[in-house]
Amino acid sequence: MAKIIPGKNGSKKDVIMQKASLLFMRKGFTATSMRDIASAIGVEAPSLYNHIESKHEILKDICFRVAGLFTAYLREVELSSQSSLSKIEYIIRFHISMMIEEYESIYISDHEWKHLPEPFLNDFKNQRQAYRTRIAVILQNGIDNREVNDIDPSVAVLTILSAINGIESWQRSRKKIDSKLLEENMVTILTRGLSYQAAARPGNKRK
Amino acid sequence: MAKIIPGKNGSKKDVIMQKASLLFMRKGFTATSMRDIASAIGVEAPSLYNHIESKHEILKDICFRVAGLFTAYLREVELSSQSSLSKIEYIIRFHISMMIEEYESIYISDHEWKHLPEPFLNDFKNQRQAYRTRIAVILQNGIDNREVNDIDPSVAVLTILSAINGIESWQRSRKKIDSKLLEENMVTILTRGLSYQAAARPGNKRK
DNA sequence: GTAAAAAACTAATAAGTGTTAGTTTTGAAG
DNA sequence: CTTCAAAACTAACACTTATTAGTTTTTTAC
Image (cartoon, rainbow over all chains, first blue to last red; front, side, top):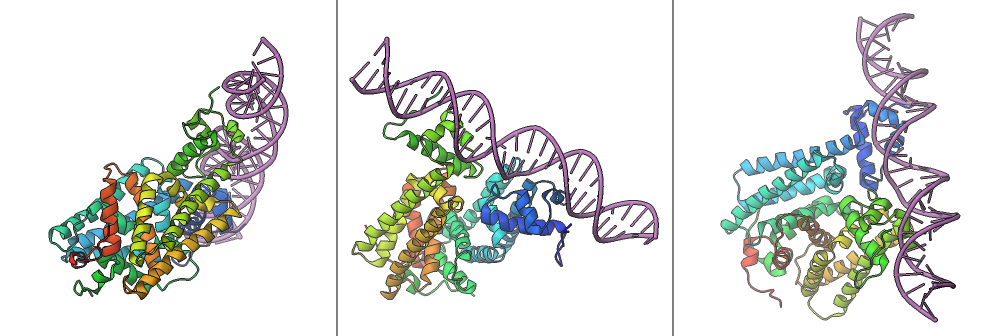
């Protein structure tokens, strides 16, 4: 009876993807049934298959779209000519803004990727690893130039990325901190550090 | 046929909890069936019910045990008389060591809590919120004393905790970074910051 | 208005879910 | 060796799962 009504600028598949994203985030991929998705749209479950191939395809599309966005931005940053620390800051700011704008997709790509079927699972894990390695290379350059404190680059990458991904729990929280404040504070912590002495020192100014 | 063999210092329920933890972590709570858990132990699924009440009880026990450990340590720190920054450092170090020693439980408590049934779900969320607020209070004290850089305490808590929780993806990674190195590097990043200028400044030494 | 295509529907499948009932096996105590 | 409880087993239940087949309705194009 009901029909899938595509949004202004989106195919019917996009509507499904959007509703599915919301549910995957709230309940998790496995705990979300095709009937859940269908009823959120106002349609019967089998009707979805006129637009998508399978439940796993939805997950796959979400995860790889996100991975593609991050990889594309990273390439831009790599090709730019800035200091290493500045590159890292741009990457941090991009991650934060993505987390705010595309929160659901990123949350899913971060928490539900393990349910990808092979060969996508392996592909995804490789892309993820490669992405981190490329950031670690930037950090290593920064260490060599004495722009960045001498710490293990892979630990730093881990710390930075997971810190940012934690914004998801902020999104869910009642009192919504202003997103610009969030970004500035987080950039401050991650680039200058927590200690007062460190922050009080001038220099390393940007923008 | 097969019998559940309790470990040296663990009841049969503990054996179930341990195997279940591993599977919940690898596949997620919902994607792990009672039959999966049973066959990992070498037993039939209904046999598990001689030792546990339900699948959800396993998750509940894992989540609340973890929450209890963190809350207990936090109380100790709160009652101690140290600088705020030092308190924060102790909390960070505790989180890191817990992440290394009790990796599976903490991962689950962090990623699968949303599958807790009510009223446990609400209870857990409240505990979590209260825990973060108490850390934010310590940070605010540090800001007032000019020990800690003036940033939003709730953003700082979010950044710290999620950065540490990211260690889970390190655990899974091939090349295992030495855990002491990991701890020191992460503490460095989170307490002194990334920028070289900041780190070059002496002071703020501990231990 | 009619024909074709798109997309909804109902019905059904085979497999998998957590869990219960009832029964048999096992391990320890006397 | 017998007794008794703990803990395993098999069989089954009531439901849910993703997905397919076949059919009817709706939309689009001429």
